Amino acid sequence: MTHAEVQQIVLDIIADIAPDEDLSNVKPEVKLRDQLSLDSMDFLDIVMELRKKHGIEVPEAEYPQLASLESCANYLQPKFAAKGK
Image (cartoon, rainbow, N blue to C red; front, top):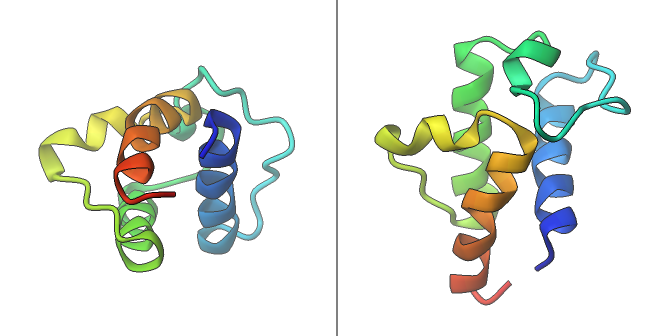
């Protein structure tokens, strides 16, 4: 799975969680919470969707790895690869 595909998965999850957000101008290197109206519950929903839809576990200590779209892709790409995706 490519870096861009992982980023799209994260954007798709955010679109499901926060359908009113405009995701067309999300900057990959800027923290998601600085760009979007996501609260801590939305963030937990992202983590839950990763587990439920993709079988990806994110330990609480590693939540900071999901701060930006870029850091999400960097963190999640090896996890998807380990799952054979």
